[in-house]
Length: 449
Image 1 (cartoon, rainbow, N blue to C red):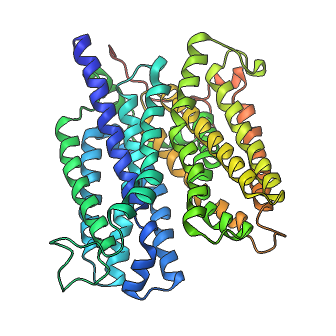
Image 2: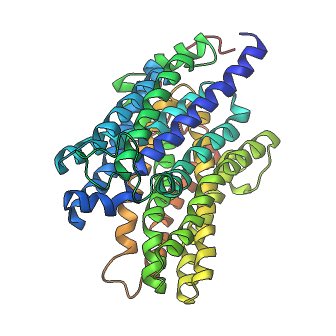
Image 3: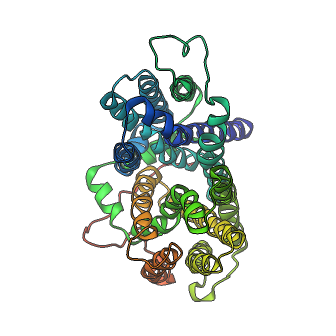
């Protein structure tokens, strides 16, 4: 491949992957802004709404774990295209659903748009060299993550507001509250179209040798081996305390600012919560970029992990997350909502930096298994979005501020495990040594130029 063709291919596939992930997150979180209208339409209780919201989260971890090796095997252009067309079709079905059962089932499948993250991580890793990988993955993930805050929460309700009608969603056979139906329908159509474009114009890897090297590492035995390596395990639990925390905070902060500070204006409370989302999403490229810089310059920022440059930045950013969680509790106890909003922004910054650092580590540590490892790390990391809100809202707590410190304390053992794995002697073999499963990693040979 000519250098100009390689350069064009890199950025074409980066743009495609980023667009896929951004739209995937719009669809994944598009349910949240319209819960009121949906509940009125189907006569749903709060518990039934909770089932839909919970199912959307619970389905994604397993979906991410499965799609990772499939992407390594068949290529991101194939799995990305098929995923977008599938979730788009079910988003369209949900727009015309007339029963709660059909609506719930179709939204569960549509919510698998959350697995586009893993597909994109693998796709970018197949095109960019190790020295620029953090920046490229950070751009992909940062802009993609904005699909939740800026796309679903901010844009969709403004386009498809109350009383929205058009030639399709103004018919008498549909319920009068048609704005959410239109939002699901048009985002579904867009996903189908983008899926076709992704399949036609996307390329799986920068060379046939790279494609074959990635395919060679896909098997059940290889997946079990990879999943139990020190590196994969520590990155997975680290992602619980970064991306899992981001999911939890995205779903909780609006309620927190409203209930803990008596902020009755829903729009203002949501705007305060959005400052966290902006930090957690848009600052993520910085985390990847710094990881690239310290690695290129061979700069020790934490001499305890001498020579492990990316590991040092990852550990520093994870430590900042823990400290910021204790800071969140202290800020809340001041009783000043503005101090709490600033603290929330700092938590989002820590999430962004650590997520960018972690997903620079994934393809750098497992270059020929990036899809499988991204699926493992991304799937397990999502669990934090289910667990942490339980601590934030626990009934036994004296107030709503203390939960952040409890979650911060629960992260300290993860930091301890990370420190152990990031020791130079352990880190040197973190993708070969591990727990429970013995054997050898499959190493494909071939020119990767």
